[in-house]
Length: 250
Image (cartoon, rainbow, N blue to C red):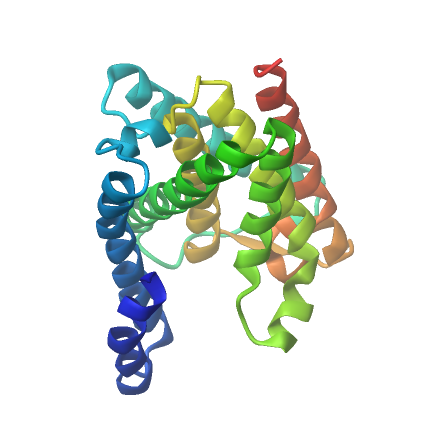
């Protein structure tokens, strides 16, 4: 239903607009808007639950807000700490920003919150809830994480092969975000914050052009295609975060 509603409007955008970033923003924004509208119908007609978003963990409480801020700070700290450690080891060099850094920071925050909110509502909200209605907690955890990782590879085959080293990191991140939600009794604030914090930190470093890799060590360590999730160091840092979140669910 979502695709049938989305495709007739999205298809012309792909043909009429040449800027790939703008195309992505418009089409994905449209898709998510339709998703939110259909959720209301889904809740009333399928489950007779008019407050489905609250069931997903999207509740406007003080505690959920504090969870979001905590997750945001943890995610940002982990990302920046990763780059700081690699700098100390001599694997990269920090550079003077060539753009207005405060603008990059604010743009990154808004973009990261949007991405974190949208992806967590879809994967740790709707999808996880659907899985948990029919499967065990363990099965739901793994199916949700695998789907999260796979759906980040909806791209041309050559690009999938080139960026595939990021798959284990995305899978681990998917597991971590489920554990984060379960550690907060089903609230979405913490996973949204964690997701946004990780994206925010990388946005600041990448868009701000703050680092330059020295080439002294293999990209398989620091991250293939300069993506920290696709490297051993990124996996190690994510493992620490995953252990911390999983421990809170036990």
